[in-house]
Image (tube, rainbow, N blue to C red; front, side, top):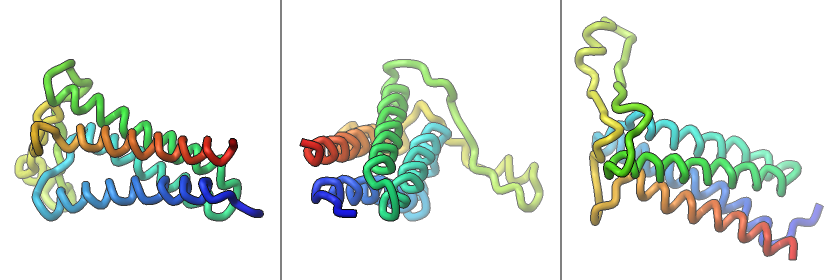
Length: 155
């Protein structure tokens, strides 16, 4: 099966965007101690789904799986935009906080020692933009890039 160049580019973009954003999320978590709140995890789940959806695009039905991966990336962007709005106080979130307790030892001690991460407070910002805001920007731009490349290939 011959793939047109823009489909190859869209497929590659649908692989690289969630991989880089997840990589950045884990570097910020394990390298800088910025633990994810519940809504941060929702954004990550969408990127995990995007990766799981784009991988079959390298084997079979590339256009379909690339579109599905693009939709998952866009979903992460939408969740990131919603999360950023909660952090900026534009609207109230569905949840206020979460915990990262390790329950392998003494469960009560683990729960009490676990950091409490609030979804409505940005742990880190750059020029007033939180990590959720950056995810909104990069995920949305990546998804629209995937869709633009797919559309260009059909013309």
